[in-house]
Length: 260
Length: 216
Image (cartoon, rainbow over all chains, first blue to last red; front, side, top):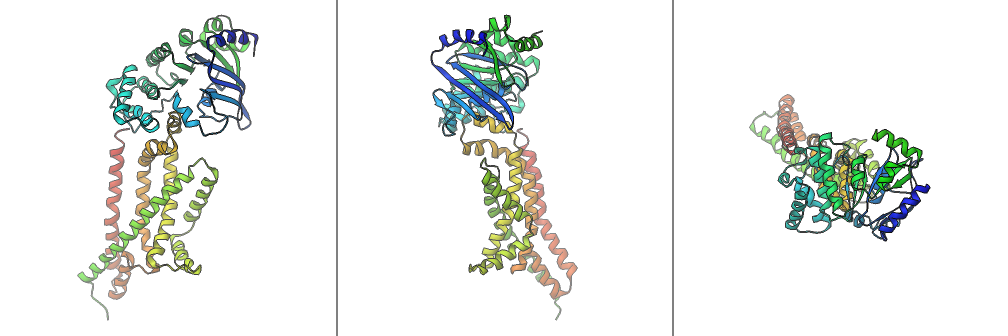
Protein backbone atom coordinates (compact mmCIF):
# COMPACT_ATOMS: atom_id res chain seq x y z
CA UNK A 1 0.00 0.00 0.00
CA UNK A 2 1.21 3.49 -0.79
CA UNK A 3 1.65 6.27 1.72
CA UNK A 4 -1.46 7.96 0.35
CA UNK A 5 -3.54 4.87 1.01
CA UNK A 6 -2.51 4.73 4.62
CA UNK A 7 -3.18 8.42 5.08
CA UNK A 8 -6.68 8.43 3.63
CA UNK A 9 -7.78 5.11 5.08
CA UNK A 10 -6.87 6.53 8.49
CA UNK A 11 -9.79 8.93 8.21
CA UNK A 12 -12.08 6.17 7.02
CA UNK A 13 -11.28 3.83 9.88
CA UNK A 14 -12.42 6.61 12.18
CA UNK A 15 -15.91 6.88 10.73
CA UNK A 16 -16.55 3.12 10.67
CA UNK A 17 -15.53 1.48 13.86
CA UNK A 18 -17.01 -1.95 13.18
CA UNK A 19 -16.45 -3.10 9.59
CA UNK A 20 -19.35 -4.97 8.00
CA UNK A 21 -17.01 -6.47 5.42
CA UNK A 22 -13.49 -7.43 6.37
CA UNK A 23 -11.09 -8.77 3.76
CA UNK A 24 -7.56 -9.76 4.71
CA UNK A 25 -4.88 -11.09 2.36
CA UNK A 26 -7.35 -12.30 -0.29
CA UNK A 27 -5.77 -14.31 -3.11
CA UNK A 28 -7.62 -15.57 -6.16
CA UNK A 29 -6.37 -17.49 -9.16
CA UNK A 30 -8.05 -18.47 -12.42
CA UNK A 31 -5.81 -21.40 -13.27
CA UNK A 32 -2.32 -19.95 -13.37
CA UNK A 33 -3.55 -16.34 -13.70
CA UNK A 34 -3.67 -14.48 -10.42
CA UNK A 35 -6.80 -12.32 -10.48
CA UNK A 36 -6.54 -10.91 -6.95
CA UNK A 37 -3.25 -10.31 -5.18
CA UNK A 38 -3.26 -9.96 -1.44
CA UNK A 39 -6.32 -7.72 -1.13
CA UNK A 40 -6.92 -6.01 2.21
CA UNK A 41 -10.17 -4.08 2.57
CA UNK A 42 -12.41 -3.10 5.45
CA UNK A 43 -15.82 -1.63 4.68
CA UNK A 44 -17.72 0.18 7.39
CA UNK A 45 -21.46 -0.08 7.83
CA UNK A 46 -23.11 2.58 5.68
CA UNK A 47 -19.97 3.22 3.72
CA UNK A 48 -20.25 3.86 -0.02
CA UNK A 49 -17.33 2.63 -2.07
CA UNK A 50 -16.66 2.99 -5.77
CA UNK A 51 -14.17 0.63 -7.34
CA UNK A 52 -12.66 1.54 -10.68
CA UNK A 53 -9.82 0.31 -12.82
CA UNK A 54 -9.01 -0.98 -16.29
CA UNK A 55 -10.74 -4.08 -17.60
CA UNK A 56 -9.20 -7.26 -16.22
CA UNK A 57 -7.98 -5.47 -13.11
CA UNK A 58 -9.98 -7.76 -10.80
CA UNK A 59 -12.60 -5.26 -9.62
CA UNK A 60 -15.61 -7.42 -10.58
CA UNK A 61 -13.88 -10.51 -9.26
CA UNK A 62 -13.35 -8.78 -5.93
CA UNK A 63 -17.00 -7.91 -5.34
CA UNK A 64 -18.09 -11.34 -6.64
CA UNK A 65 -15.95 -12.88 -3.90
CA UNK A 66 -17.97 -11.00 -1.30
CA UNK A 67 -21.11 -13.05 -2.01
CA UNK A 68 -19.01 -16.00 -3.05
CA UNK A 69 -20.05 -16.10 -6.70
CA UNK A 70 -16.30 -16.55 -7.06
CA UNK A 71 -14.27 -18.82 -4.87
CA UNK A 72 -10.91 -17.70 -3.61
CA UNK A 73 -7.82 -19.66 -2.71
CA UNK A 74 -6.35 -17.85 0.23
CA UNK A 75 -7.08 -15.09 2.71
CA UNK A 76 -9.91 -14.19 5.00
CA UNK A 77 -13.31 -12.72 4.16
CA UNK A 78 -15.87 -11.82 6.81
CA UNK A 79 -19.30 -10.48 5.93
CA UNK A 80 -21.33 -9.17 8.86
CA UNK A 81 -19.18 -11.30 11.15
CA UNK A 82 -19.70 -14.52 9.17
CA UNK A 83 -16.48 -16.08 7.93
CA UNK A 84 -16.85 -17.10 4.28
CA UNK A 85 -13.45 -18.75 4.25
CA UNK A 86 -14.51 -21.55 6.53
CA UNK A 87 -16.57 -23.50 4.04
CA UNK A 88 -19.77 -23.31 2.09
CA UNK A 89 -22.24 -23.81 4.91
CA UNK A 90 -23.17 -20.18 5.57
CA UNK A 91 -23.19 -19.00 1.99
CA UNK A 92 -26.93 -18.86 1.35
CA UNK A 93 -27.41 -17.01 4.65
CA UNK A 94 -24.78 -14.43 3.68
CA UNK A 95 -26.18 -14.09 0.16
CA UNK A 96 -29.61 -13.31 1.56
CA UNK A 97 -28.06 -10.26 3.30
CA UNK A 98 -26.01 -9.11 0.32
CA UNK A 99 -27.88 -7.78 -2.71
CA UNK A 100 -26.26 -7.79 -6.11
CA UNK A 101 -26.99 -5.93 -9.32
CA UNK A 102 -25.40 -7.22 -12.52
CA UNK A 103 -24.26 -5.57 -15.71
CA UNK A 104 -26.67 -7.71 -17.75
CA UNK A 105 -29.61 -7.30 -15.29
CA UNK A 106 -30.19 -11.08 -15.15
CA UNK A 107 -33.91 -10.74 -14.52
CA UNK A 108 -35.86 -13.99 -14.75
CA UNK A 109 -37.49 -13.81 -18.20
CA UNK A 110 -40.28 -16.32 -17.47
CA UNK A 111 -41.56 -14.31 -14.46
CA UNK A 112 -43.29 -10.95 -14.43
CA UNK A 113 -41.58 -7.93 -12.90
CA UNK A 114 -43.43 -8.30 -9.60
CA UNK A 115 -42.85 -12.09 -9.53
CA UNK A 116 -39.13 -11.43 -10.03
CA UNK A 117 -39.24 -9.33 -6.87
CA UNK A 118 -41.40 -11.76 -4.88
CA UNK A 119 -39.42 -14.94 -5.52
CA UNK A 120 -36.57 -14.61 -3.03
CA UNK A 121 -38.62 -13.21 -0.13
CA UNK A 122 -41.06 -16.10 -0.52
CA UNK A 123 -38.50 -18.88 -0.96
CA UNK A 124 -35.70 -17.66 1.29
CA UNK A 125 -37.52 -15.61 3.94
CA UNK A 126 -40.72 -17.72 3.83
CA UNK A 127 -42.75 -14.54 3.44
CA UNK A 128 -46.41 -15.06 2.54
CA UNK A 129 -47.42 -14.34 -1.04
CA UNK A 130 -49.52 -11.33 -0.06
CA UNK A 131 -46.74 -9.85 2.08
CA UNK A 132 -44.14 -10.53 -0.61
CA UNK A 133 -46.31 -8.69 -3.12
CA UNK A 134 -46.60 -5.71 -0.76
CA UNK A 135 -42.83 -5.63 -0.32
CA UNK A 136 -42.30 -5.93 -4.07
CA UNK A 137 -44.70 -3.08 -4.82
CA UNK A 138 -43.05 -0.93 -2.16
CA UNK A 139 -39.64 -1.24 -3.81
CA UNK A 140 -41.00 -1.05 -7.35
CA UNK A 141 -42.60 2.23 -6.31
CA UNK A 142 -39.29 3.33 -4.89
CA UNK A 143 -37.53 2.71 -8.21
CA UNK A 144 -40.51 4.46 -9.84
CA UNK A 145 -41.93 1.65 -11.99
CA UNK A 146 -44.91 0.26 -10.03
CA UNK A 147 -47.04 0.51 -13.19
CA UNK A 148 -44.86 -2.07 -14.96
CA UNK A 149 -45.33 -4.70 -12.24
CA UNK A 150 -47.27 -7.21 -14.33
CA UNK A 151 -45.18 -6.97 -17.47
CA UNK A 152 -42.42 -9.38 -18.43
CA UNK A 153 -38.81 -8.14 -18.36
CA UNK A 154 -38.47 -8.33 -22.15
CA UNK A 155 -41.23 -5.71 -22.47
CA UNK A 156 -39.17 -3.15 -20.53
CA UNK A 157 -36.33 -0.87 -21.58
CA UNK A 158 -32.82 -1.58 -20.35
CA UNK A 159 -32.96 1.18 -17.76
CA UNK A 160 -36.29 -0.08 -16.45
CA UNK A 161 -34.96 -3.64 -16.29
CA UNK A 162 -31.97 -2.53 -14.27
CA UNK A 163 -34.23 -0.63 -11.86
CA UNK A 164 -36.32 -3.79 -11.46
CA UNK A 165 -33.08 -5.66 -10.71
CA UNK A 166 -32.29 -3.11 -8.01
CA UNK A 167 -35.80 -3.45 -6.57
CA UNK A 168 -35.53 -7.25 -6.66
CA UNK A 169 -32.34 -7.09 -4.59
CA UNK A 170 -33.85 -4.56 -2.16
CA UNK A 171 -36.86 -6.82 -1.49
CA UNK A 172 -34.54 -9.00 0.61
CA UNK A 173 -33.72 -5.96 2.81
CA UNK A 174 -30.00 -6.53 2.30
CA UNK A 175 -27.41 -4.97 4.59
CA UNK A 176 -24.99 -4.55 1.71
CA UNK A 177 -25.54 -3.86 -1.99
CA UNK A 178 -23.00 -4.84 -4.64
CA UNK A 179 -23.17 -3.23 -8.08
CA UNK A 180 -21.19 -4.81 -10.90
CA UNK A 181 -20.97 -2.21 -13.67
CA UNK A 182 -24.71 -1.55 -13.45
CA UNK A 183 -24.81 1.05 -16.22
CA UNK A 184 -22.30 -0.42 -18.68
CA UNK A 185 -24.89 -2.32 -20.75
CA UNK A 186 -27.30 0.62 -20.95
CA UNK A 187 -27.96 3.06 -23.73
CA UNK A 188 -26.58 6.49 -22.73
CA UNK A 189 -30.02 8.06 -22.18
CA UNK A 190 -30.90 5.40 -19.61
CA UNK A 191 -27.78 5.68 -17.47
CA UNK A 192 -29.12 8.61 -15.49
CA UNK A 193 -32.32 6.94 -14.28
CA UNK A 194 -30.30 4.04 -12.89
CA UNK A 195 -27.69 6.30 -11.30
CA UNK A 196 -30.43 8.43 -9.73
CA UNK A 197 -31.89 5.29 -8.18
CA UNK A 198 -28.47 4.38 -6.81
CA UNK A 199 -27.91 7.88 -5.47
CA UNK A 200 -31.25 7.67 -3.64
CA UNK A 201 -30.15 4.41 -2.12
CA UNK A 202 -26.82 5.86 -1.06
CA UNK A 203 -28.54 8.82 0.58
CA UNK A 204 -30.60 6.39 2.65
CA UNK A 205 -27.45 5.02 4.20
CA UNK A 206 -27.11 1.70 2.36
CA UNK A 207 -23.68 0.08 2.46
CA UNK A 208 -22.67 0.01 -1.18
CA UNK A 209 -19.80 -1.30 -3.25
CA UNK A 210 -20.02 -0.19 -6.86
CA UNK A 211 -17.80 -1.23 -9.69
CA UNK A 212 -18.36 1.59 -12.16
CA UNK A 213 -16.68 4.06 -14.42
CA UNK A 214 -19.27 6.74 -13.68
CA UNK A 215 -16.91 9.17 -12.03
CA UNK A 216 -19.63 11.78 -11.57
CA UNK A 217 -21.46 9.26 -9.41
CA UNK A 218 -18.24 8.53 -7.51
CA UNK A 219 -17.71 12.23 -6.82
CA UNK A 220 -21.28 12.71 -5.67
CA UNK A 221 -21.86 9.77 -3.35
CA UNK A 222 -18.67 7.81 -2.66
CA UNK A 223 -17.00 7.94 0.74
CA UNK A 224 -14.01 6.23 -0.80
CA UNK A 225 -12.79 5.52 -4.32
CA UNK A 226 -10.60 2.49 -4.87
CA UNK A 227 -8.42 2.09 -7.93
CA UNK A 228 -7.43 -1.44 -8.90
CA UNK A 229 -4.95 -2.62 -11.50
CA UNK A 230 -3.61 -6.10 -12.23
CA UNK A 231 -5.35 -7.66 -9.27
CA UNK A 232 -4.10 -5.15 -6.69
CA UNK A 233 -5.57 -2.19 -4.87
CA UNK A 234 -3.22 0.48 -6.19
CA UNK A 235 -4.68 3.53 -4.52
CA UNK A 236 -7.70 4.58 -2.52
CA UNK A 237 -8.98 7.74 -0.97
CA UNK A 238 -11.82 10.18 -0.59
CA UNK A 239 -13.13 11.30 -3.98
CA UNK A 240 -11.86 14.88 -3.64
CA UNK A 241 -8.24 14.00 -3.06
CA UNK A 242 -8.45 10.90 -5.26
CA UNK A 243 -9.48 12.86 -8.34
CA UNK A 244 -7.61 16.07 -7.62
CA UNK A 245 -4.35 14.61 -6.55
CA UNK A 246 -3.81 10.93 -7.47
CA UNK A 247 -0.50 9.71 -6.10
CA UNK A 248 0.22 6.65 -8.21
CA UNK A 249 1.36 6.85 -11.82
CA UNK A 250 -1.06 4.08 -12.87
CA UNK A 251 -3.99 5.93 -11.28
CA UNK A 252 -3.03 9.16 -13.03
CA UNK A 253 -2.78 7.44 -16.37
CA UNK A 254 -6.13 5.65 -15.89
CA UNK A 255 -7.95 8.81 -14.78
CA UNK A 256 -6.37 10.69 -17.67
CA UNK A 257 -7.91 8.23 -20.07
CA UNK A 258 -11.44 8.18 -18.68
CA UNK A 259 -11.86 11.79 -17.51
CA UNK A 260 -10.27 13.65 -20.48
CA UNK B 1 -54.53 -72.17 -45.85
CA UNK B 2 -54.23 -68.58 -46.93
CA UNK B 3 -56.53 -66.17 -45.09
CA UNK B 4 -58.23 -63.28 -46.79
CA UNK B 5 -57.25 -59.77 -45.76
CA UNK B 6 -60.51 -58.39 -44.36
CA UNK B 7 -61.80 -56.18 -41.58
CA UNK B 8 -60.84 -58.74 -38.92
CA UNK B 9 -57.25 -58.71 -40.10
CA UNK B 10 -57.16 -54.92 -40.05
CA UNK B 11 -58.65 -54.88 -36.55
CA UNK B 12 -56.09 -57.46 -35.42
CA UNK B 13 -53.29 -55.13 -36.52
CA UNK B 14 -55.02 -52.20 -34.85
CA UNK B 15 -55.27 -54.14 -31.58
CA UNK B 16 -51.46 -54.10 -31.51
CA UNK B 17 -51.66 -50.36 -30.94
CA UNK B 18 -52.60 -50.93 -27.29
CA UNK B 19 -49.28 -52.63 -26.60
CA UNK B 20 -47.42 -49.96 -28.58
CA UNK B 21 -49.05 -47.19 -26.55
CA UNK B 22 -48.47 -49.04 -23.26
CA UNK B 23 -44.81 -49.62 -24.09
CA UNK B 24 -44.39 -45.98 -25.15
CA UNK B 25 -45.92 -44.72 -21.91
CA UNK B 26 -43.73 -47.00 -19.81
CA UNK B 27 -40.64 -45.83 -21.68
CA UNK B 28 -41.57 -42.19 -21.39
CA UNK B 29 -42.60 -42.17 -17.75
CA UNK B 30 -39.67 -44.35 -16.63
CA UNK B 31 -37.28 -42.53 -18.94
CA UNK B 32 -38.66 -39.16 -17.84
CA UNK B 33 -38.16 -39.76 -14.13
CA UNK B 34 -34.70 -41.28 -14.40
CA UNK B 35 -33.77 -38.96 -17.26
CA UNK B 36 -34.37 -35.92 -15.04
CA UNK B 37 -32.20 -37.53 -12.37
CA UNK B 38 -29.45 -38.16 -14.93
CA UNK B 39 -29.70 -34.59 -16.23
CA UNK B 40 -29.43 -33.18 -12.69
CA UNK B 41 -26.45 -35.41 -11.86
CA UNK B 42 -24.82 -34.47 -15.15
CA UNK B 43 -25.12 -30.76 -14.36
CA UNK B 44 -24.31 -31.08 -10.65
CA UNK B 45 -21.30 -29.29 -9.20
CA UNK B 46 -20.07 -32.65 -7.91
CA UNK B 47 -17.60 -33.87 -10.54
CA UNK B 48 -17.90 -37.56 -9.67
CA UNK B 49 -21.69 -37.49 -10.10
CA UNK B 50 -21.25 -35.73 -13.44
CA UNK B 51 -18.76 -38.33 -14.70
CA UNK B 52 -20.94 -41.26 -13.64
CA UNK B 53 -23.94 -39.76 -15.40
CA UNK B 54 -21.83 -39.10 -18.50
CA UNK B 55 -20.64 -42.72 -18.57
CA UNK B 56 -24.24 -43.92 -18.22
CA UNK B 57 -25.35 -41.73 -21.12
CA UNK B 58 -22.42 -42.82 -23.29
CA UNK B 59 -23.12 -46.51 -22.71
CA UNK B 60 -26.83 -46.45 -23.47
CA UNK B 61 -26.52 -44.03 -26.37
CA UNK B 62 -23.71 -46.10 -27.82
CA UNK B 63 -25.47 -49.47 -27.89
CA UNK B 64 -28.62 -50.47 -29.82
CA UNK B 65 -31.93 -50.64 -27.97
CA UNK B 66 -32.30 -54.19 -29.29
CA UNK B 67 -29.11 -55.27 -27.45
CA UNK B 68 -30.25 -53.52 -24.30
CA UNK B 69 -33.55 -55.39 -24.34
CA UNK B 70 -31.73 -58.69 -24.94
CA UNK B 71 -29.25 -57.97 -22.16
CA UNK B 72 -32.03 -57.32 -19.66
CA UNK B 73 -34.28 -60.19 -20.80
CA UNK B 74 -31.55 -62.84 -20.96
CA UNK B 75 -28.97 -61.17 -18.72
CA UNK B 76 -30.98 -60.84 -15.51
CA UNK B 77 -32.03 -64.53 -15.43
CA UNK B 78 -28.33 -65.40 -15.79
CA UNK B 79 -27.82 -63.68 -12.43
CA UNK B 80 -30.70 -65.68 -10.98
CA UNK B 81 -33.23 -62.85 -11.30
CA UNK B 82 -36.33 -64.12 -13.06
CA UNK B 83 -38.14 -61.40 -15.01
CA UNK B 84 -41.29 -61.55 -17.06
CA UNK B 85 -41.43 -59.70 -20.36
CA UNK B 86 -43.17 -56.62 -18.90
CA UNK B 87 -40.53 -56.14 -16.21
CA UNK B 88 -37.77 -56.72 -18.72
CA UNK B 89 -39.16 -54.26 -21.24
CA UNK B 90 -39.82 -51.66 -18.51
CA UNK B 91 -36.21 -51.85 -17.34
CA UNK B 92 -34.81 -51.91 -20.87
CA UNK B 93 -36.84 -48.99 -22.21
CA UNK B 94 -36.32 -46.95 -19.04
CA UNK B 95 -32.53 -47.34 -19.25
CA UNK B 96 -32.58 -46.42 -22.92
CA UNK B 97 -34.96 -43.46 -22.71
CA UNK B 98 -33.40 -42.03 -19.54
CA UNK B 99 -29.99 -41.84 -21.21
CA UNK B 100 -31.34 -39.94 -24.21
CA UNK B 101 -33.71 -37.70 -22.25
CA UNK B 102 -30.97 -37.08 -19.67
CA UNK B 103 -28.67 -35.82 -22.40
CA UNK B 104 -31.39 -33.70 -24.06
CA UNK B 105 -32.32 -32.11 -20.74
CA UNK B 106 -28.69 -31.57 -19.71
CA UNK B 107 -28.28 -29.57 -22.91
CA UNK B 108 -31.43 -27.56 -22.14
CA UNK B 109 -30.35 -26.84 -18.57
CA UNK B 110 -26.92 -25.69 -19.72
CA UNK B 111 -28.47 -23.56 -22.45
CA UNK B 112 -30.09 -21.34 -19.81
CA UNK B 113 -27.78 -18.30 -19.56
CA UNK B 114 -25.24 -18.49 -16.72
CA UNK B 115 -26.46 -15.15 -15.36
CA UNK B 116 -29.76 -16.76 -14.34
CA UNK B 117 -27.97 -19.13 -12.00
CA UNK B 118 -25.77 -16.31 -10.69
CA UNK B 119 -28.72 -14.03 -10.02
CA UNK B 120 -30.61 -16.74 -8.15
CA UNK B 121 -27.46 -17.56 -6.15
CA UNK B 122 -26.95 -13.91 -5.33
CA UNK B 123 -30.51 -13.73 -3.98
CA UNK B 124 -29.72 -16.53 -1.52
CA UNK B 125 -32.05 -19.09 -3.13
CA UNK B 126 -31.24 -22.66 -2.18
CA UNK B 127 -30.30 -25.28 -4.77
CA UNK B 128 -33.82 -26.72 -4.99
CA UNK B 129 -35.47 -23.31 -5.45
CA UNK B 130 -32.84 -22.23 -8.00
CA UNK B 131 -33.70 -25.29 -10.06
CA UNK B 132 -37.46 -25.42 -9.61
CA UNK B 133 -38.23 -21.70 -9.83
CA UNK B 134 -35.56 -20.38 -12.16
CA UNK B 135 -33.60 -22.90 -14.20
CA UNK B 136 -36.02 -25.74 -15.01
CA UNK B 137 -38.93 -23.57 -16.24
CA UNK B 138 -36.57 -21.96 -18.74
CA UNK B 139 -34.90 -25.25 -19.64
CA UNK B 140 -38.33 -26.81 -20.16
CA UNK B 141 -39.17 -24.41 -22.98
CA UNK B 142 -35.86 -25.09 -24.67
CA UNK B 143 -36.34 -28.84 -24.37
CA UNK B 144 -39.84 -29.22 -25.85
CA UNK B 145 -38.81 -29.71 -29.47
CA UNK B 146 -35.98 -32.22 -28.92
CA UNK B 147 -37.99 -34.06 -26.26
CA UNK B 148 -40.97 -34.61 -28.55
CA UNK B 149 -38.59 -35.55 -31.35
CA UNK B 150 -37.17 -38.26 -29.13
CA UNK B 151 -40.62 -39.35 -27.98
CA UNK B 152 -41.58 -39.98 -31.61
CA UNK B 153 -38.41 -42.03 -32.06
CA UNK B 154 -39.30 -43.93 -28.92
CA UNK B 155 -42.82 -44.82 -30.10
CA UNK B 156 -41.34 -46.28 -33.25
CA UNK B 157 -38.56 -47.91 -31.25
CA UNK B 158 -41.04 -49.91 -29.17
CA UNK B 159 -41.41 -52.20 -32.20
CA UNK B 160 -38.19 -53.84 -31.00
CA UNK B 161 -40.11 -55.22 -28.01
CA UNK B 162 -41.57 -57.75 -30.46
CA UNK B 163 -38.26 -59.54 -30.19
CA UNK B 164 -38.93 -60.56 -26.57
CA UNK B 165 -42.50 -61.63 -27.26
CA UNK B 166 -44.71 -58.54 -27.40
CA UNK B 167 -47.43 -58.46 -30.03
CA UNK B 168 -47.54 -54.75 -30.69
CA UNK B 169 -48.21 -52.88 -33.95
CA UNK B 170 -45.26 -54.16 -35.95
CA UNK B 171 -45.47 -57.75 -34.73
CA UNK B 172 -49.25 -57.94 -35.37
CA UNK B 173 -48.66 -56.67 -38.90
CA UNK B 174 -45.99 -59.31 -39.37
CA UNK B 175 -48.42 -62.04 -38.24
CA UNK B 176 -51.13 -60.87 -40.65
CA UNK B 177 -48.62 -60.45 -43.47
CA UNK B 178 -47.47 -64.06 -43.11
CA UNK B 179 -50.97 -65.53 -42.90
CA UNK B 180 -52.58 -63.49 -45.70
CA UNK B 181 -49.53 -63.22 -47.97
CA UNK B 182 -50.37 -59.52 -48.36
CA UNK B 183 -47.27 -57.92 -46.82
CA UNK B 184 -47.65 -54.60 -48.64
CA UNK B 185 -51.19 -54.15 -47.36
CA UNK B 186 -50.34 -55.22 -43.79
CA UNK B 187 -47.20 -53.09 -43.49
CA UNK B 188 -48.81 -50.19 -45.32
CA UNK B 189 -51.65 -50.20 -42.82
CA UNK B 190 -49.30 -50.36 -39.84
CA UNK B 191 -47.29 -47.44 -41.24
CA UNK B 192 -50.49 -45.40 -41.30
CA UNK B 193 -51.23 -46.36 -37.67
CA UNK B 194 -47.74 -45.25 -36.58
CA UNK B 195 -48.19 -42.01 -38.48
CA UNK B 196 -51.54 -41.33 -36.81
CA UNK B 197 -49.86 -41.86 -33.44
CA UNK B 198 -46.77 -39.72 -34.08
CA UNK B 199 -47.95 -36.87 -36.31
CA UNK B 200 -50.21 -35.11 -33.75
CA UNK B 201 -47.32 -35.14 -31.27
CA UNK B 202 -45.10 -33.23 -33.65
CA UNK B 203 -47.84 -30.69 -34.27
CA UNK B 204 -48.53 -30.39 -30.54
CA UNK B 205 -44.88 -29.65 -29.88
CA UNK B 206 -44.81 -26.92 -32.53
CA UNK B 207 -47.90 -25.38 -30.94
CA UNK B 208 -46.52 -25.55 -27.42
CA UNK B 209 -43.31 -23.88 -28.52
CA UNK B 210 -45.19 -21.02 -30.13
CA UNK B 211 -47.41 -20.45 -27.11
CA UNK B 212 -44.61 -20.60 -24.55
CA UNK B 213 -42.43 -18.19 -26.47
CA UNK B 214 -45.01 -15.38 -26.25
CA UNK B 215 -44.03 -14.24 -22.77
CA UNK B 216 -40.31 -13.95 -23.55
